[in-house]
Length: 413
Image (cartoon, rainbow, N blue to C red; front, top):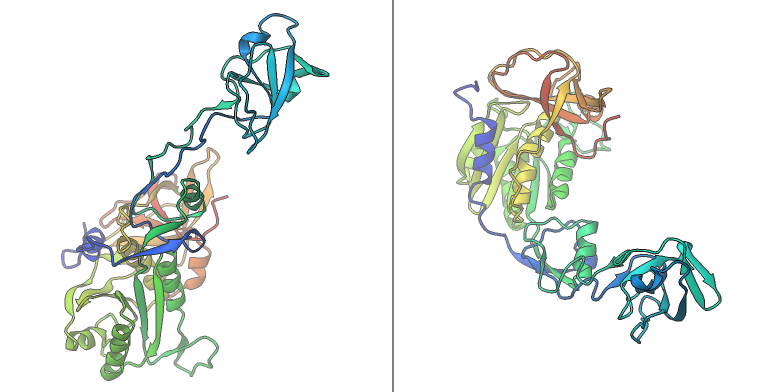
């Protein structure tokens, strides 16, 4: 059972996504610029595909009944190629040379494959005549004019763009990308490439979090690193407002230490706090609130905690702001444990794990030995997060478990 003083992960996600009931805006994007965007409206086919019956293979268009008699021969009277069909109506005893994608001549009802044809000058026969309808793609096999083929909320990948082009849409209505401002805080942080002091570290969380945002279709605004000072942090908040950020993501400073100043700094600016602690490991300190029209998500400072929280909460929020109907859906998968798992306590645990395959093809998730939330090396060696529910009992090696795949991770071997 979850810690009664902490919000459950599911309730926290529901509250992060609450109130996302309309798009931030709708834009038009040409096909060449629409990859990765999210459709803002259903698309209706403006044509029928194929527009008429076409051949699925190279061969000869003919009437199946004409080859029923043994030794029957047909006279080849013309040719049909893609874009250049045979204009006359096929009569009894005739055949037309035809190529893949070419219109089937009027009167023909089957295609004799070229490798099955016996040709003698202008005559053809067949050792094994094809039945009627063989190798013909009927009109409208793919879609008919007026069909809804792509729906609002669809993320446009290569396949979806090809379909949008095929139904004759050159410009697509897409949701405006959410602008997500990233603000890192901490006197100990320096940017990559700098020479850190004795007690300083390299700021790295923002690069992973930015990747989560961009993968979900958002636009990243990197505000930089700010010192542990309320006045400095307020400058960062002002910069987020200047950029008209839809979401402000803070990195670090979300806990209760003397130098964790984000909550008081945001409170001074008028933030309406929703919650700030959840029953999750890694990632208990998580700020969620509103500052005017800007949504606030304060992520923990430890790298793995920040990345896991970004995957669980920020990615779905960015998708929801673009109208994705499955933004909050459970994307976990079934697997079997590759090691014995101890009973879990009061927080849902996301354990870094390697994925392999059992002899019978099932996914096997084996947790890394080290699970400290500061260890990025263990994260890069993992392909999934093994999910342990709050209060879960022990699980023996080989028993069922649930996993959440890490984006970009290699497939299980």
